[in-house]
Length: 251
Image 1 (spheres, helix red, strand yellow):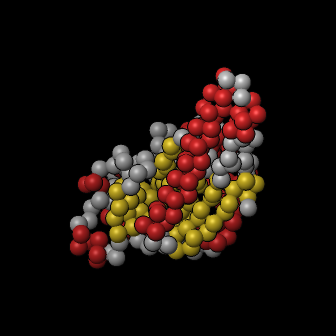
Image 2 (tube, helix red, strand yellow; image 1 turned 45 degrees about the horizontal axis):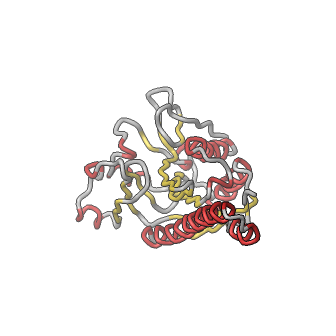
Image 3 (cartoon, helix red, strand yellow; image 1 turned 90 degrees about the vertical axis):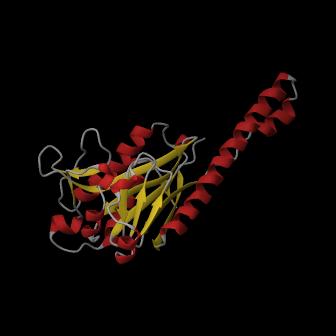
């Protein structure tokens, strides 16, 4: 039976390394449970061959895997994904210090991006066997949650063919990105996720080639609407859309 219960956690403003470590802990625990379940299945299959049915039944009962949806913000930080290029960071060590920013190479997909205050970073740590085992659908569903959230503020956003994330005016020269995405998935367990620009300092994006794209702009809700947005309100709306789209039972 699929477990669609999801523990929601808001970690607030948290150091990137600390958040990464916490993610890894939850991710690894879920993967370990799945591996143990797989070993139990194999033991069950072996036991049934020998007709030890009473013992086999006990071996067959799988342990439940847990799902988490994390929201947080980070102090100024740049992260480079596995497919990224180091020279897409346009700052040296002194430049990072001057900007009070840190830099990490990490184990998600994608290129370089920026996280900072005023940006909702979401880390869904889900066992997709509880939902659907399609990584492309997973990404599109996260994008849809952001698109619907923006629509609630009267903003019409969409997708850019060939790229992940959420964009405005993707079909013309005014194309600009408001949400970047990069995930890791192993044994259908996810980590990392999306970065949704609500009220961040957009000048920090000038220090990188965002997501490896050097000819498109980056924007935020604040820039599009012309005023600072209540980020806690946006979190509530985004959380609701994610919950509905994934058919989650949010805890």
